[in-house]
Image (cartoon, rainbow, N blue to C red):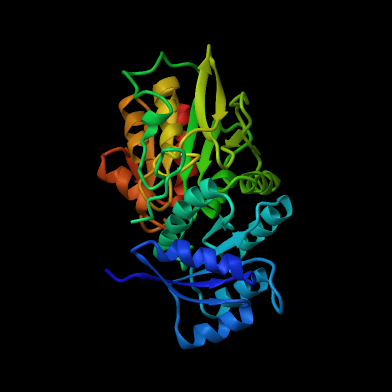
Length: 361
């Protein structure tokens, strides 16, 4: 199988070296070259076009956002933005996603072995997802991490046991659970902007690094009729509100009486992710059953496929985004293959499906 050819663009020699080592250890990826700034990258692209570019934000001669906009206008190539973990950096990366970047990653910390283990696994997965991205539509190295190999795919069993049957009786409240990854930032915008102020409570897992989820939620809140925020442990799930799982933490749906809350906590990587869609969906099968609506959207891999099946078996109404409107059809495809999706629909009808299902409920 042809390897994914990657061009690394970063003004830091140590970051270029570390990224090259991480990506080069994956048998499916080949580092085509490195560049210290966008001008050098543009010259490199003239000779050979990469499958994916990893792009720093702050660089000499031209910043990454400007280069990204020029690239998308002239020669669209899947771009993954690479940034330090800062509040200011997270706001800038929201601009990068708006400008056409497929995904974001954190710069690997060379001095932290545990961080490098997890971030290396995520970096490789993000690059593979970017290589599959339809931008017109919009084996990792076995590191040892506290006795756990990040490349080993743990299931939601690592966080909570499987559902034992249909959940407790229906209440008057419905809750929508949404999972997305590569391409999900733009797709979630489409869904949430279509939601009216009295929409059912929504809980979301979007694969993003920590810090970035807060900026993402803030941006959505500014353009949506419903309230959108990064979830905190114990937040209630309310009508007209959407909670987004914070990066690097799992989020689970919890029921107390007739009310729903979220539990936000650390834990191992599940389906190679934290937060994991499988963890959210399994908790919905446990706590909400037929009171829940499950939606799986664009993304690389299969996180959420098993959980959506568990939601369906518990009586929930389940939906998958179709291939034509998915940036990457990995996660919905796996869910559909398992028979987990009761309906397969295009992106612009997902909000309507959620609203109709909540009224039937």
